[in-house]
Image (cartoon, rainbow over all chains, first blue to last red; front, top):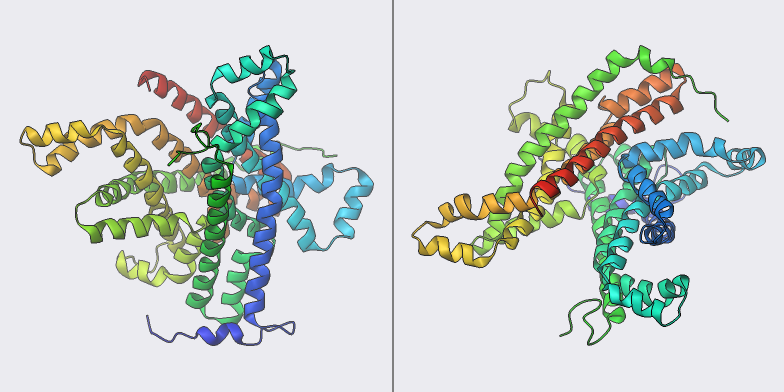
Length: 249
Length: 225
């Protein structure tokens, strides 16, 4: 390997648009970050919903939760992306489908589809975490709340969930980090995010090592930011003197 | 809505089975090699020599913070020349298959290392001291006492990681290697039955992964974990 590094490449003019290569990178980074945030919101809501279903007394509802998890955990992410990409626009009502295909620009389409695919995929994992969090609470909490006259929904929202979320912050963090990495798969259906930018940079600038190192560092940076934020959150959510949400020092 | 036409699958079975072979090849090599390297990394992580510990930790953290897609592209786009030289390949070999295998092995080794390390930590310290007190050397302690117990505890996790790896092999799509998924989409694209083929591929992966995860529950019960 010859040492003809050229880190200045990022400040040179990109072939189209009045921007530098660095702007491409930043664009990709922002898309990846936005995809991560949107998909995480979807995953969190869906995961919590099915996670709660899986701990309810009703056998049928538990089965629904289990089916969701089984389906979304056992199909590779890339296949799920393709199923969304090929099938989802046609499943919409006719007018909406036409609007979706004709009016939205491709990147927005891909972004929405990627959000759904990634959100539901990670949702299955979040579901398992929420479920294990609720099951990890001592059964006394549930009985006590019910005995106090709280209804089942009240028991969940005021007693079980707040405690369960505190317990599962660390596994949720690693799920988030996984998701940051999984956003890269969105490049396969044509979303222009960091990984696609790495390929474009390589193609147009020809500096393979520089582009790939920069993009890899961008992923590491995003992971680092997420980890820091979650550390702070974990500290904030800790309940002192109960041991819930981490050890008391 | 869709009108599905599944006849296409029957016609393309021979091609698909070739794809399945590629998928299995990548999965099995990276499970076996990944576990071997992972064990070495895990052992290095608890070594008394600090540089070894740092090296192993750096390796694991590097691979765990980079997307698999990037790792695959790294090995495919940037280092194929090194691979050909390093592994002594003839120019005729399919570099895509080799780079995919190397990428998956390297990537999975990091994950296996973490699993095995956790397993080794779960073996109580007394075992270590007892073995040393009996006059075993350190490596004997590791090989005859610690690792066997660690692997017993770890079996379900290792299997689950295998399932994840099997699913992840579908990602070789991005380097154009004709594994099961890529073959399916290619056939779909050329014949116009893309949705059917992708759904079929999804169903195929689902069946395999679901069966293995059922097996994992059985294994867990057998091992009384």
